[in-house]
Image (tube, rainbow over all chains, first blue to last red; front, side, top):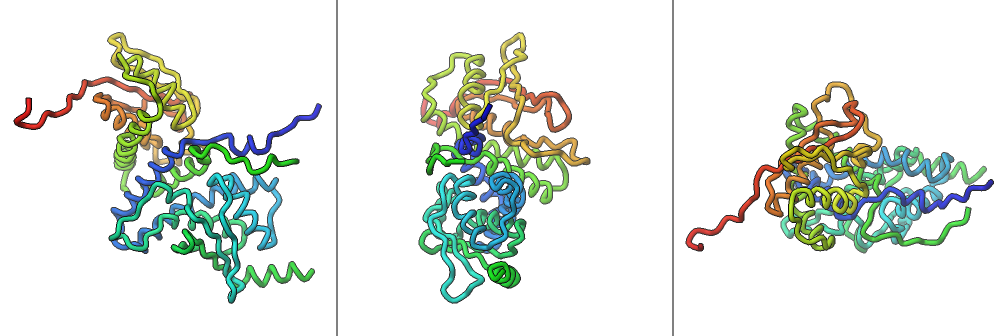
Length: 180
Length: 180
């Protein structure tokens, strides 16, 4: 007897209303806002919370989806994150994955409107605040946990750009894997 | 395994694990920021209240349930419509008081506590207190003063999670001075 598993059904089985998440995130931003004085501090707090989410998400989603097979090549990992991971976590793939022209350690994932920013409007006095710092935190924890140490920061560019700066060791290691 | 293409999914739904892990990150942060479980409980209740006050508007706009004639109807709407819409589950309504002003919601599973274990030393923490605040806030916006509290919690070792709702009084809109 063969059992057909609806792969996508499995992945989408536990969902909550977007309003539930959006309101929770809004409360979180307000809570953090009351405990810091500057926009960079606020983004840092959000990034830290995101990292807590990301480090747990690694086990739950990444390993389950990849059938417990570790990704070792950098580009494959980035493509997996931009497409499958983003789709599972945020409901759609990220818009673009690019490499910096002049720096082989830096990559960009670009999204016009990140899920977490969907219901957030930033008042003028908050200047450059981008709450997708939370998402940047998730990304950073996932990459670090999967043994691709990196720093991820968020920027207002083409919508929202996540700038991923890998450790030199990651690039060196990847080159070695290539040349085998 | 063949994929079924880029299934869009319901745009009003988000990954449930993202929600659960985000809530977990928040509770962990609150535990760090506050000195004792009671303060964390209060903060969770407050944040839940803020969410409930806004969630009710989304609910009234989308649910089309009409006005409830009595508290029993309210209970049914909460369990069968609201919980289903926002958390994807339907608790059981039970344990009505003889006066009909108190009932319990029984939850066999709780999306907020997926993957969660209470560490020792936090026996007073009402991990899902956000729910109580949300129910209280939402009901206040429809003119009901209701006391909401946990009486049993699977996280604390009970067999089931039970939330008790007690109707206190009907709230009248305050009439501004000078108008009658």
